[in-house]
Image (cartoon, rainbow, N blue to C red; front, top):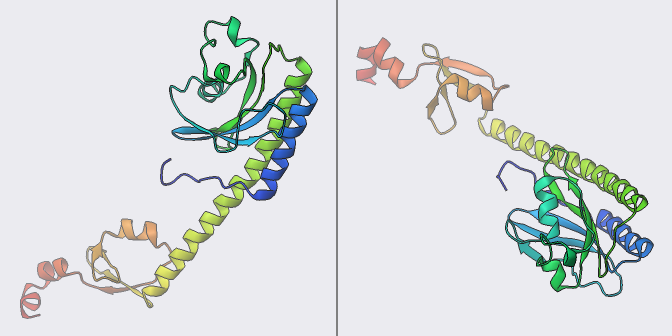
Length: 232
């Protein structure tokens, strides 16, 4: 994850509601596993798993992407629905890791962040052939929309929090300048609080509200007043 990206921290109350979603989903469809998977490059992990009988998945279970062979890897890559009714009868899926856990059918949808990047997947798995009905698909899509709404609120709150932190750091830096900032009357270079001179464009980008006083940078002093510069 790039340093300028926001790492989504899902609050405990939201995790609890997602747990309820997975439990209800597994109970309604009568399947062993309903999962909320999370993608944290380069891993995909079980973020929430239903409390249901014969569920082989546990929170925190991880696999490396790419190349895991997991059903969810395809959903993450394509950002689209994946339905595998019977992996044992499908040459593309008969050797996937889910089969080793006796999870031979799968239906999953991507969960996206507000910026379009994948957060993970919402998926259901069964230990027998399952075509999954249109009603089940609509139910999962509705639950996905609810989760994406949660993520949008979390994302915006964390964006604002990060912005406020940067603003606080900026104000503290301005305070450390102790008043007016020196600007060269000739080349308009700016002297920072370490006595280093910078082009005004660079400085104004970082300090748009700074107040300036005039002076001369050493280079301009030598060019404009060589005698004074030699004496000083």
